Length: 218
Image (cartoon, rainbow, N blue to C red; front, side):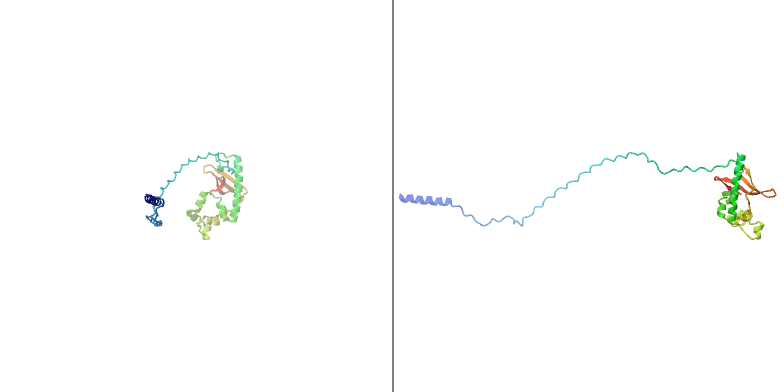
């Protein structure tokens, strides 16, 4: 009986020792399914683009308020006055005296121009219709037939030739004293005469009032 009890005690002791000791585990590492360095990279899905915000339309600018025009500091010249016209219908004694004085002054100026042979200044005192006439070849050919010019074999080719060879020799000795005038209302002209010593009147010019001044019309 005693042996039987010892046997049971040994069996219990052995059973308890087996239960209390843990199972020995293998130290070998468990291989991973894929190496860490060789694990396939999972591509990241790109984030969808964020649309730009729609621009907010700006309100149209308000038109600037109209300001009153600034006063101009520049001095405005008065419009040019029109040249007065000569009234041939109302020729009073006062008009005759005034016109005679103007004609005397013009003749004096023309005498100086002719004596100096200043063709340009002479032309400035001619009415345009008269300048056109003395510039025509027909007029120049007719004057070239005068005996004095033919004897000197002078042939006029221009208005300057007429001034040099006809006007200067014939007008250089004109005087302003004893100037008389006559009005021709029909042709709107004034005739200027010089009274020579024997009492006769020598016509000097036919004048026309143009652009506010007297011009030679013949």
